[in-house]
Image 1 (cartoon, rainbow, N blue to C red):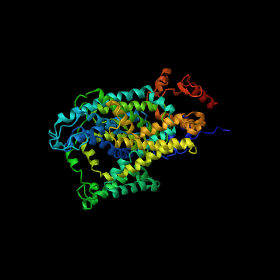
Image 2: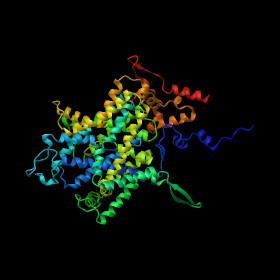
Image 3: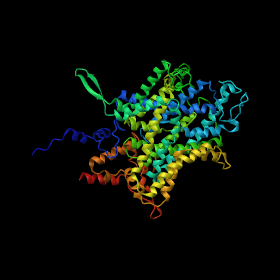
Image 4: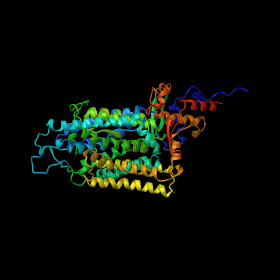
Length: 629
């Protein structure tokens, strides 16, 4: 009997099919990829789709990013009429966000996650600028003085464009961010954050992620309240495109040289629900503005939805301006500023760890391993140092709203995020293009925020599938962590200065931490989950750790083994990982893919640390030989 000739698929496997191609062959039956993604992490969409999808991520992160310098400008003593400086700050933060996003997706966790300006650095920055030496000059009018008053440039005893007023203040913030972010780099690269994750389970992750969305409801409501009808139109369009019309495809034709035209179906609504909704609602606002329905007066009904409120930005923005480190001068450093900024760094790290898990789940890949989390925190610290050096006025962190966009668009491609990062850098240099999107009415942004923040909240709640929800212990931990994570930050925010430890630095640290819902709820869940008696199965740790440890036995079979290797390779550092695996000592480095997480584990039954040493790759080699036999 003649030997059976191998099929094309088998020949491809024999010749060493790449991980990316194997992903396309069995994406739909992957146990972890239940998101029915249009493009997975390793997939590369066509260049034109990558540009449009990257632009969509830019639009989603635009509102949160541009708000940071606008909020800080008042406390930096930048007058309201000095829009040129504000536009330069906006261009700087977008340029730095693009650099940080490229670093995170290439060398950090390598998840499709956007980096952008964070509000966790705004609160300590305001506390620093409230010191007597950094307060804005006494107003010439009889208006009361003090930080928090809405001073304008005309109220200062200086001209609106006096650089001697605002530049020393932003240089102080730059130095504080740069020095404080060194601690974040050390925590990530030494593996301290990864070690703590050994004690974190679904009951701690769920409130951390969910409160990232729930705590932002005030931001979404403030944008939406400016014109609820336009906000509702945006929400209805996003829901229609992403849910009701997700399986509707648009016929299109592609002509080939010498081969005629080919008719194809394009999933337009599935790929671009957000950008379609924004474009259509934006066009509707423009028509109503021209027709006179929406007046030019922002205080009148519908005025906030008019498209001509910010047209002056297009005239004032420069065509080309390249941000560079030290553009405002040499940063200054002082001990109170550095210690105060550490609170923002700690809150940012807690927020980012929850975002990593949310992004992995949205992308249909296993939760990030310890080395990826360590590396991600370290790279974020490097990004904050760059943000301080460039003088963006704030640090950078992972963006939850863009993670929600992955769930809406079903596109988790890393390449799309990298293209979006390039778009941020281009728009950061070309001010006219960035200024165009400043004219998007706030009610439209509010509708996008409501949908995205809701998706983030749902992703956090979905982690509770691993725990026993019939257990009164778990119900207590869940209920308390969620509710306490909302009430305590609200109390701290409504009672400024209530924390008085006798040290300004400690006051700032505790104030920022306790005003962060993610930290309060996540820490409450972490503390209760690790102190209240309960079995590992009841706490959901068994199923949770099965996801964390992607072994061949758990996957089962050669095909599932390939899938586990492919999903694990998502977090590998490109190019140098094969070289790292040749050296045994590399398994002791916490931020490298070769790091052996079993070297140090905590044995609770024996109440002692157990050190597990094994030769790198020996176990995997034995499994490979047994499967071959």
